[in-house]
Image (tube, rainbow, N blue to C red):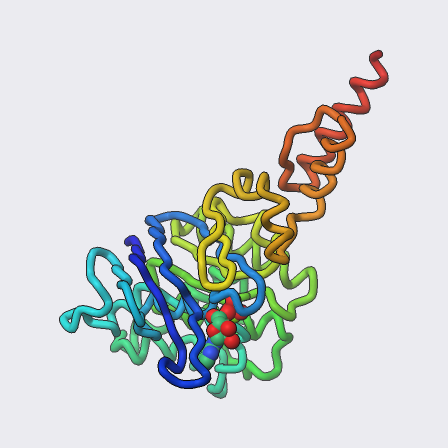
Length: 287
Ligand code: ADP
Ligand code: MG
């Protein structure tokens, strides 16, 4: 399961005074099992790009190829593509509408023609994957739940279709720090345990640095960096220039380095930074 994007440009309202070139000649290939963080400031084209991954938006130029099949090819079954590339929109809980959690999570697979007898298994599996207890939550109304729970139910609705690739557009937006941490942990588990390919859209470096194995940085519709978090964060100045910055711990390490301390160029987590700083301190005591 791979997604390849070639020379993709996307223009809204072409030929009108409202024309916007949202994506400008994007080339990108995402392989099976990757955890890609797609990051960029507001308006950089993130949401436009992810809607090309399953054919919701058609390219103005270029093409999107999923598993060897071009989405612009008339013979490609877009329904099937949308089942395999599950897209969780921003604020997906706004799309909950059924009376019970069960009915909401079962909605997608039911539409796909999954037999009634199998729906329960699908729903249980999907709710468990997002850390909810099916027996406690299935019969409740989604509207009685907390914001974080509603969002997880909405994500479960996509997982119930058993996608190979899970794309989430700003899934932590508006969650409190605990809800955010729990959701990021669950996404990490979906990747590491369930082997899912995950594409996580965010404008928060702190979120992405924790979970992604690869970062793709968008700015004004173009890819300006693509690599491991470590590789991308060494370009701190460029990231700041495009209005993104680096995680606070990374910034601290860069500042220490500028002052002449022998720290590595990049630290991604607070734990890593602590170990390095304690190491410096011990080194100092020994002198
Ligand atoms: P992001 O998700 O990174 O904030 P978007 O993909 O939403 O970026 O937007 C990229 C650009 O396209 C922005 O300039 C935005 O105003 C414009 N845009 C997005 N959606 C539409 C639309 N439906 N109609 C016209 N312009 C749009
Ligand atoms: Mg967006």
